[in-house]
Image 1 (cartoon, rainbow, N blue to C red):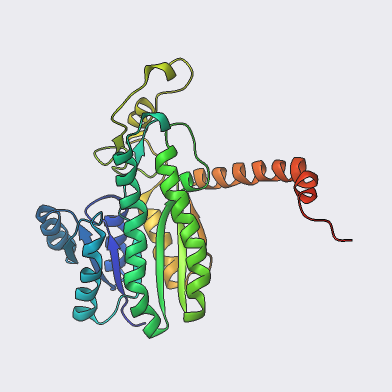
Image 2: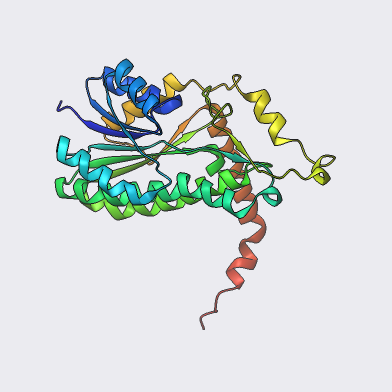
Length: 277
C-alpha cells in the first residue's frame, strides 16, 4: 500500500498524539499542528513526525499551512480535525467572548481546514476527512451546553459535507468519542468565568464533576486511535464511528427521545401541512 500523508491537528497530547503514534507505527507520514515551540520540539524528537506551530483559532493562517504541506509533500490523504477544547459551565454563566472562542476552535477552524484541503483532495479524486466529535454532539447535558453546541454544529456541517464531497471520491467520518482518559478534563478544560450560586441547590456542579472524572475516564485513547486508523485504512466504511460505551448510551437515549416525540407528535405534525383535495 502507498504511504499515506496524514495531517492531524493537536498532536502535542491526548488522542492527537496517540493517533500520530499509531499512524507513524503503520509507516504512514504524519504532519501535526501544535501551539508552541516546546511542543513542536517534543513531537519531532520523540515521534519523528513533522509539526507546524499554528494557532487554529486564527483561521487566516490555515490556507498558507495547507499550501506549505502540499508543496512539501505533494498531497494530504487524511485530514484529522482533532484539535479542540471543552468549555464548561451553565449557559447563563458564559460571556459572549468565551462562546466565540469555543466555536472559533471547535467549528470555524475545522471548516477552514476542510475548505483549504478539499481542492487538493478533489484534484486527486480521493481523500478522507476525520472529524473528532463527541457524545456531547449527540446529547447535551447540564453544564456542557456550549461545548455540545460546538459539536452539534460540527455534526451538522459534517452531515452536509459528506453528501457534497462523496461524488468526488472523498470520504467524511465522524469519530464519536465518549470520555477518554486524556488531559481533556485536566489542563485543557476551560470553565465559564462567572459562577451563579442560584443554581447550586438545583443542579450538580459541572466543575466538581469534571475534576472528579479527570484520570478516571473509561475510554482508552490507544484503542480509539487504533479504531480510527483501521476505519481509514478500510476506506471509511461508515459515516459515524461510535467509540466508547458512553457514545452508544448517548445514541440510544437520543433515539428513544426521538421515537417518543414521533409517537406523540406525528398526528399534529402531519396536520400542519396543506391538505390536498
